[in-house]
Image 1 (cartoon, rainbow, N blue to C red):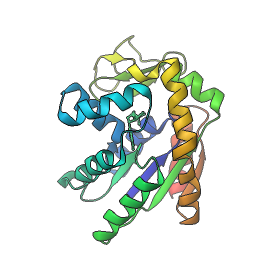
Image 2: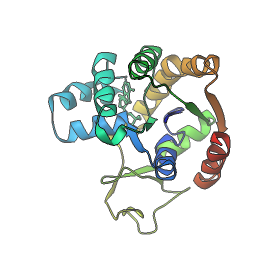
Image 3: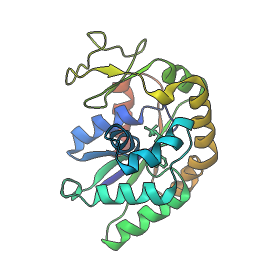
Length: 213
Ligand code: AMP
C-alpha cells in the first residue's frame, strides 16, 4: 500500500505520517528527512541539496526522484510506504507513477491535509523537531512533556534552519506554485481524500483513518 500525504509546509504531514505508519505497519518515507540526514552526514547529496533547502527552493527533480526511488526500493518498503513531502510537483508525481507501474503497483490514496495560510504560518513559527525520530512539536499547541526532550524517544528537540520567516515565506510560495497542482492531478485520478487539518493531531488522525476506511 502506498499512501501520499499532501499539504503545505506546516500542514502536519510529518506528525500524521508517523502516526499513520505505526497504525498501518508501513514505513514513513519523508524526502525532507532524507535530505536533512544527508546534510548532517555531509554526503555529496547533502552538499548538493543544502543550497536549495536553505533558500526554501525545491531540490532539482533528478536528484530528488533518484533519492526517493532508491529509498522505496529498500527491503523495508516492500509492502509499501507512507510518503511525506514527495511528490512535490507534477514531474515527481509522474516519475513515481511510472516507477510503481513498472513493478505492477500504484499509489492507493492521497491524503490532502488542508490548513489555512494563517494557521500554517503560526505552526511553522513555533515548531520544534526531534533530532532522533523527527517527531514534531509546537511550543504552544503541542509542547513536549519535558522542555527540549522528545516524548517518544527522549531525543533532543531543535528548530529547523528553514523555519525562519523569510524561508517559510518562500516555501509557502513554492508550495502554491508547484505542489498545489497535484491536488487536481490526484483528484482526476480519483485518489484524493481531502482532510480538514485544523484541530489537534489526534482529531486530524481520526479523520484520516475514517477517510481511508
Ligand atoms: P520538508 O521537510 O518536506 O519541509 O522539506 C525540506 C526541504 O527539503 C524543502 O524545502 C526542499 O528544499 C527539500 N525537499 C524536500 N522534499 C522535496 C521534494 N519532494 N522535492 C524537492 N525538494 C524537496
